[in-house]
Image (cartoon, rainbow, N blue to C red; front, side, top):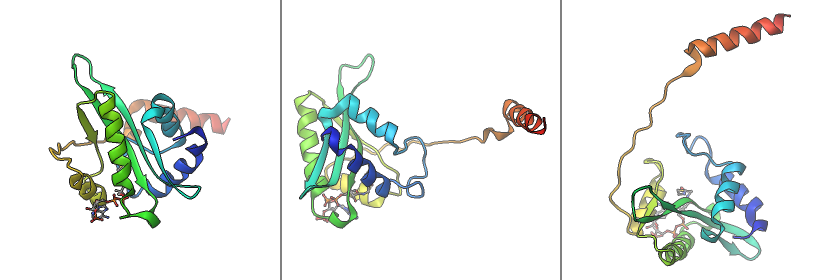
Length: 161
Ligand SMILES: CC(C)(COP(=O)(O)OP(=O)(O)OC[C@H]1O[C@@H](n2cnc3c(N)ncnc32)[C@H](O)[C@@H]1OP(=O)(O)O)[C@@H](O)C(=O)NCCC(=O)NCCS
């Protein structure tokens, strides 16, 4: 992936990672996220190109955990343009990214996605990923927090003045 691909990758990601498809907000696709991943890990960010057009991407990073000698290769975002689905583009991107991770001495590769994302889960299983670990995201509405009420109250008073 090159700097000039950023706009196309961003646009494709916006088509694929829509809010209703991705209810968990712990990771969201936005320009800051994309820039941060690309700036820190350009050598493990890949695109698939058909003609002049970007039709797929795989964005990964090497991760080291404190007090753990193992290196992990984490596939953060993978996407293929719907018109090109089931043409083995993701398979090829994943294969290349895996080679890059191995070259950087990663010993485990991690991927994650929403449990309901059937196409991604089938894809990853087909690629040999297993040992799924469930993770629960809990949320709490902070509108009732005393500070939030205070802030709304202060804002309303300012509006009146
Ligand atoms: C998941 C995704 C990347 C797969 O891309 P792709 O290029 O179509 O995948 P491939 O053609 O390499 O598929 C290889 C195999 O994975 C499985 N697979 C892929 N898409 C599937 C689907 N929609 N349903 C069931 N199995 C699927 C199949 O076993 C397939 O082999 P087959 O076509 O011979 O049956 C693509 O569907 C996508 O961009 N989804 C939206 C974004 C997303 O969910 N990203 C993943 C999390 S970041």
